[in-house]
Image 1 (spheres, one colour):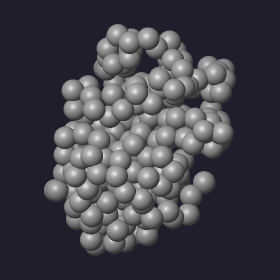
Image 2 (cartoon, helix red, strand yellow):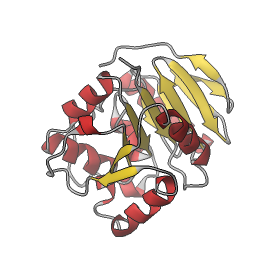
Image 3 (spheres, helix red, strand yellow):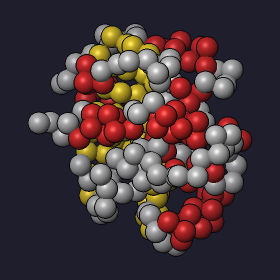
Length: 234
């Protein structure tokens, strides 16, 4: 069985995520071309109707066969895909729909079976252990209209929580989150992301990624690879 790769993107535009996308495409050369794009976190956004055009600009110029899960109620076999890409939008709405339509365990099993998954922005946050990082101070798009109280994520990032769109102004809010949950946090700016294979993390992009443990952080510049301390997950 091949080892799964988790891609965690900081939530930037296609230029800002280009290097992580390139790394993902390179890894796919050894796997295949069938991709499932899940854009349902955008369903309440005016970007929803055109998100497929954005996604195809990233992958269609190459050789990929792309399916789009427009509705979580659609019956689909995840095992048919070489990569699942979960896009950004409203984190609470996304986790609500994945739970409501019983997709959480199939997604976790898909990764456990050695498959690759890419999360951008909200899609990255739900791959963490706790999704409470989405509401740390400024995310207008992450209003909790579904009244979500269970903040469990899919916990596919070796026990870390994920903070996307990170900047230094969010440092205090992240510290408070860690104090409440006890979970370390991967803080990704929009210009960068992480390729996570096992517990080996490679920083890909234009800016450093910060690993926060308690009230201290480790700054990892682009192109850094390190073994992350594995906490309880899966």
